[in-house]
Length: 509
Ligand code: PFF
Image 1: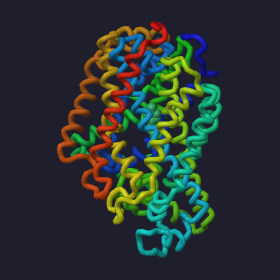
Image 2: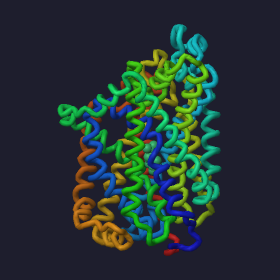
Image 3: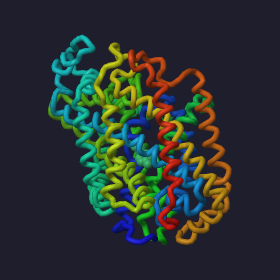
């Protein structure tokens, strides 16, 4: 392991941090809306297949190269598979920064809803008149509240609160991360289990579960369902962004990474499963209609259900508060890993202090978070994306989420599978593991994983021919955004990745 690198205090600290990274907005907000969009039962089978054929092998790879080299993602790839692989690593760092920018913006909105739970979010007759968009309604409408909230400057303040918390937790590296995840990770399990018990014991709660688990064989034949499940699995397990390698690099060299991969995946998927049960039971109990964007399910459909949970306004408020608090802490333990990945990569490459590296990552990402929360209204009918910030977020998410992670996944599988040789990684993993993985692992890393990823990327690109993403929303003078954002994302990611790759590595300098 390279000199003066930090270490986790305990294996538990690492497992809490890595599972805290995996469990986040993806498990609560994105999973349920994906599962709903793809028809509930049709989603589960592709999702579980994705876990075994894609998630576990890539997690073993990302954990494995972290402990093999004791370095963050780009430097680990560089050492094991050369400069071209390092380029993939820096691309992942840039993608992590793009995602961090909008991930924190969503957390800022969740924070706003959390504060609103004890404000006017659940107060009949108060919520509605605030909105510039809709006629006053007699009962509280979380949707109206949400759109009102994002059309104010408050979220810009909230994102600085979230950024402050992130930097506070990251300030002392593994030491302060470990302290935070020891509190937050168990807490979010307790809240989620409480929510699912409440949902399932309500009359009709089981219907949601039946919807979620009744297999829908017709749905499975659609390519989109598979694409959705594979991308969701990648994001949910925090793969393709270098975060898992950064966390693993702080472990001793003899860590059992096969066992760790199973444990972290199991914790992540169980949480996702429980979150699905909780959300779908509420959805069916209150016959809610989750039509709309990805955020709608958690940000206003579920709060609408929470509003009907009890006749006591204080119980409603408390539940609403805890629901958004859960989203905020789950998101926070993920956003710290999204920031730690790039920061540790910069520390390794440029040999700069943690403080400097954090500033280099945080400043551009904060600007991005502010852009994603800009309250300027671009769609007066709110038929599309509402505010400028939401439009920027939505278009950026489309490109980064659907392509960056998977392209990096493809490149790392090729680099390790073919350039280093999958067998070298397999032997290194087996050396310290109780269960050994057989030669099937080589076939997965060399053929199956790249083949699947290429197919998913190819079919996604093919579906782009229907029109540029976001171009159907009328954003007035901002109608250039759907073209500008993908170009900006590609140029900046590739440009910075080229620049950093071309600089000499510390050992060579
Ligand atoms: N896995 C996180 C979630 O499900 O919300 C998101 C994430 C965190 C993705 C860190 C990637 C990453 F590196």
